[in-house]
Amino acid sequence: MKSKYMIAFLVLMGLPGCQSILKSEPAKGTLPQGHKVLVDDGTCPAGQVKQVTGATPGTPRVKECIPMPAR
Image (cartoon, rainbow, N blue to C red; front, side, top):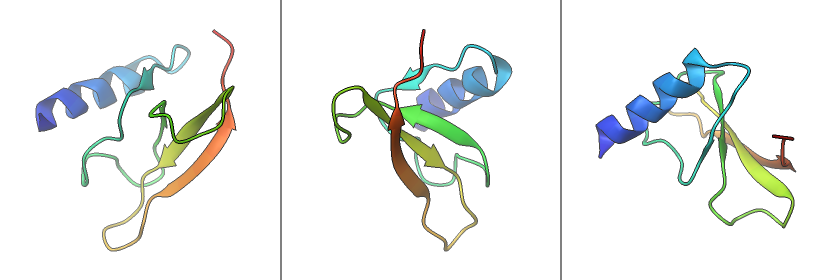
């Protein structure tokens, strides 16, 4: 399960112009500090997606709803 998230993370970092939207947040410890991923897990209002920013160990991740990016 952890490797699934790591593969998704590597794909996201390798294609900066084509950011994918994940269905769930990456596991703890797999999102480096300052890196951002988009997660569509149903927690944000319609037309928005959750943006998760990695943090240092012991500090909570920053999570915010942002407008859905154009595809």
